[in-house]
Length: 154
Image 1 (cartoon, rainbow, N blue to C red):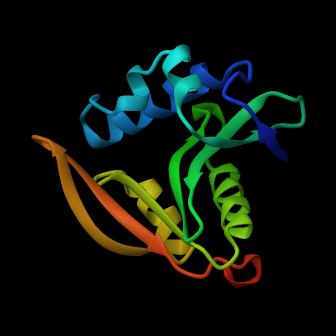
Image 2 (cartoon, rainbow, N blue to C red):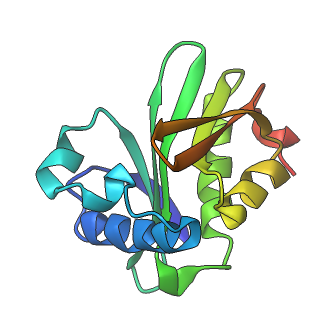
């Protein structure tokens, strides 16, 4: 697997996003996840920094996107192609963002019932900071990881 910087124009990115968020929608029993319905144009309009994970054949197998300030990185999206689950792609992408964060905090939110995502973040040292209901019946949980030097993330 190779991880490299990509742009929102990356071929296959919107298809990867829709496929990944369809899986989350099934897990949480709710398809009102905004990235699931986003168009290519809407995706490109987001102020996000992107990394892509490519398999040995050069195919885009996963991606992560974030926004950042001087004190925090907000992990906005983490996507792994359904055919590439359980290969460590999501973990590798999050760890790469954590390494780039240095001393900054990393924040992330996911569906409250998305147990695979929650386990990933908890295993990487993220702490649950709360939950919210952005629209009636759709619950998300918020996590925060302080001090994300690459050497302290098991």
